[in-house]
Amino acid sequence: MRKKQGFRLEQPVDQIRSGIRLIVETFRGRSLRFRRLRLTAGITAAIALSLWATVGGVFPSPASARQAHEVMSVLGNVIWGELFKPDSEPILRVQSGDLITMQTVSHEGILADQGDTVEFLTGGGIAESDILPDQLQIKAEVEKTGPGPHVITGPIYVEGAEPGDVLEIKTVSIDYRVPYGVISNRHGRGSLPGEYPENDAPIYTKVIPLDRENDIGIFKPANGLPNLDIPLKPFMGIMGVVPADPEDAVNSVPPGIYGGNIDIKLLGVGSSLYLPVQVPGALFYSGDPHCAQGNGEVALTAIECSLTPTFELTVHKDMALETPMGETEDAWIAVGLDEDLDEAMKKSVREYLRIANEEYGLTKPDALLFGSAAIDFEVSQVVDIVKGIHGVIPKEMFAPLMSGD
Image (cartoon, rainbow, N blue to C red; front, side, top):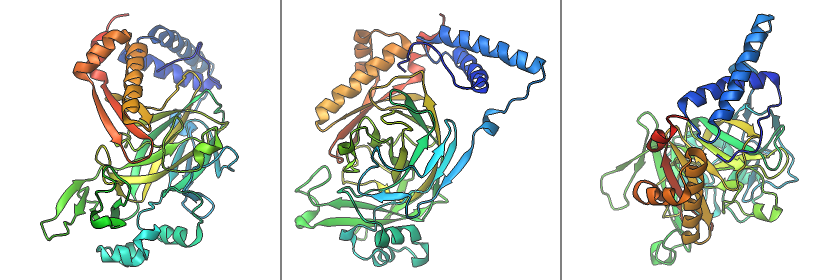
């Protein structure tokens, strides 16, 4: 990660807690560039912790210090077709480190080209009693104010977040809201516009029943062939902060430096997405819930299904990013976004070079050679106007660079 000069925390308890965490990270060898800084900060915090204990001080644990919030997908908490703007009124204010359990609603099944929602879903084998009431209410009562299809929940104001900071969105858990999803291909869209749907049909769409006990989606071929199982790997297609330029928010489809419709399937439970904060409070939002997606998302959609994710939102004052960056337990995710897929690839490779250099000390010329032999660059999606490439950078590969000083 790119770090700013210095090390600053707002609260004494946070400094102690962060120092302990940094000691752990130091011994894990997570970052070469700031190993000495973290060790110094960690020792300082450990001394402070001992002094606090000596004088009988009491401090909260990280788990007890943070607050848990719940956001419902009710009228007033969602918009349809666009992103939130800098002047959008937040529906909730939280502290850095707080947990937010957020209901999200899939747009598939309620779009105009799918007809009556109840008829569409029951025709796909879904019991009417299983249809999410929020979908029906949003279709009936929420104005679609932008050209995008997505229903977005938010925005959430994170105290202390300012432009130049980084907001970390960690996906702690994801729960299913309904036993169904939908896959769609529309005329003029997808990876083969003009070829599919066949016969110039406006839409080809299919309801996917979910076997949540076995974590599979049931794909029913149209010509009577046996059903196919799709492993469910839920993640949020849209996680973002409000863009500084309101023009970037008029359509929910294209992603940008603010995140948004990134559609990277690796950003599931346990992952973190790091976004450069664009406006005070960050104004976090989420939507476009997916149950499963193939890289490329070639038809147009994933298995779109309503989900309830729980996020941990953390403001980083000691980071600086110019583009979104992802992280899983095992890998960094170098994100490249551009309307031109070739340019998206270049941006992803440049971001990989930055990570290899700043995290592990590898020179960029060496990192380029190493990446050519060892790093996979994958197409996130080609259907969102702004296309995405992500490089998957295994941390274990760089472990030899983390031994020693």
